[in-house]
Length: 285
Image (tube, rainbow, N blue to C red; front, side, top):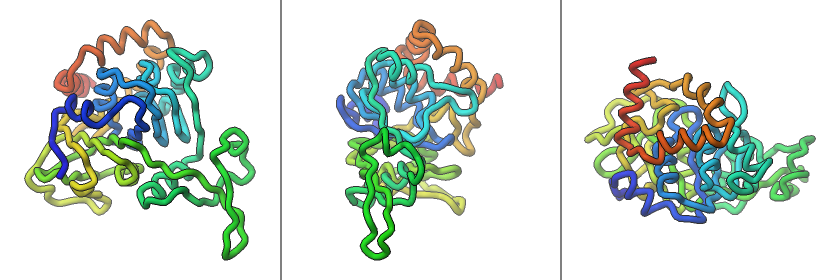
């Protein structure tokens, strides 16, 4: 059964220096609070895996937590670049970042392969693209039945998966609803999994048709962190804080403004303060 722990204890127990870490959530349920705790605990030399690295990964990279990024698209959604990611790749600040770029389809298939315990994923893709020229891990196989040449990518088998979900019950089962990305596959592919949730309940009650329940045996630890996905959103709890995504563009452009913001809003804050900020900003919007 998954342990219910305070966020700081959960990160300390589960995320280690040098780990490969997949922090997933597609627009919805991005695990910002957990990522901030990883930054506060000064984790280093991480390989970050994510289909769509955005603000959270910009922060982790800018604070020197990552040596490598495996991804399929990176940017500030609807706004523009990730300046801390660009600074790391182009200028080596705070240190050089190695990148491994894939397509969305390849990333999703790699998670599915990892969840199934397979060594690699097979897909129809990359035909006529230049990605195989810059990513030597993209290879091909010939189908033994049809002779068709298909692309392959290594399975994602992260040391740790970190996701945010709506609810957990008292046995450690986890409920996801709304727009889902590859959270389920990331958790099943990972050796260890940390899930932050809005609340713990006795019973999940009525569920939508696309609800996904992760059984307790797939989860290492659950941490109750109301507002833990902010500034992304949690269906039925709070909406996406679009203004912050625009604000981040100015914050992250320069190193000094970035470091000052991180010191004020992440390094010296606790999850309780984070939740209070969520409520205040949402009320003011």
